[in-house]
Amino acid sequence: MEKSKTVIAAGVVDFALDYRQDIPDDQGLSIQVYAGDDDRKTEILRIDCFDQDPHYHYGPERERVRLPLDTTAEGNALGWALRNFRSNLPAMIRRAGYPDIATAVEAQPVSPSTFDAVEAKARELARTGRRAVIHERGDFIFEAGNVRFGLEFRELSGDRGLAIHVLTDTLGQEVEVLAFDCFENQPHYHYGPREQDVRIFWDKTTAGDTVRWTFDRFKQGRLKAMIERAGYPTVARALDEALIQSLLPTVEAKALALVADHAQPPSS
Image (tube, rainbow, N blue to C red; front, side, top):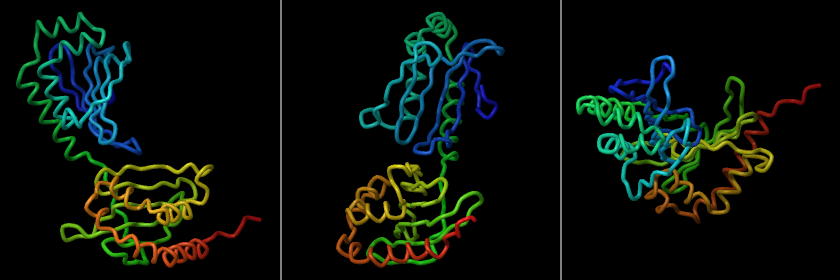
């Protein structure tokens, strides 16, 4: 087990908890159940309580069964995981292909206080481990009804390019709902950078010029659906599409001018 994980010993098995921020298009708490001696721990179960793709694994090292977790029917993924650990742990271990370990857990059950410790730590990590990104709002702001567009050219260590921010006001503060980082090396965009921070990396082979790709999507009326996916349905419903379309030529012209102003001369 990796040292960065929080490990809670529970008799026959151990619980390992790790908040996963390293998945560009998802994040969330991963809970693993291990068994074995210190020299060789075997992963028996894993429940990935992710925002976008919650799922769980029976016997990742043996059975390799991966099942989706339907949060529409089951509710919160972490709550589902904790309930099933308390009520179904031996059965789940047996399904994972480890009947001897399941029998041992039945003979030496995990104590309620240990389950309480696992739950307390899991909920703490789920609350404090979230990845969020707070960008600058941009140097040039264009008001478009209940949203605004911010433009800036960013110079980073190892990358550079135009950033397009889609901003709104909610609960008395400005929030970025979408961000398009049209960088030279690692171009990508964010759904809800302050909340779920789903990052999608462009395939430059198919997307082509990512600045034009972004404005093409705006012109095609995709902004509403993208804001909904970012987690702001009320903002999406209140969009003034006619106003946005009337402003897009001006915003796009400024964006392309910023790119041209920062173009690097070709190397000789």
